[in-house]
Image (tube, rainbow, N blue to C red):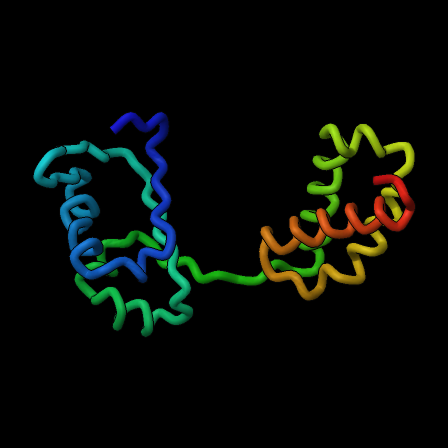
Length: 149
């Protein structure tokens, strides 16, 4: 009710009970959500629903054609390419170096060595969270190994 944006993320929408999913029919059709207590105008909103259902057929069989037909698009998940993983790791490392820990140890932390170590492990990472965790681990291990932490 007090939202500052018109962007809503419904994560793992496919796992919600059917009665929750069907509550969204009117919202998806008319841009209005009504329940016992509220009526919310959601016109001009963007609603993103995620699911781990990996095929169009599985999405239709789980959510039903009536609900799926109300989505404007189905966008499949695609793993990051090696180039994208490399770009993400560089950007995240730069962000870490700008923050307190990075500033404190920047002069004693070999950024190129960290990137070299990241490159060895980044191939097995499939999402942003995994890449971020790997960077944090590599930085921590580097600082510990060098007796800097």
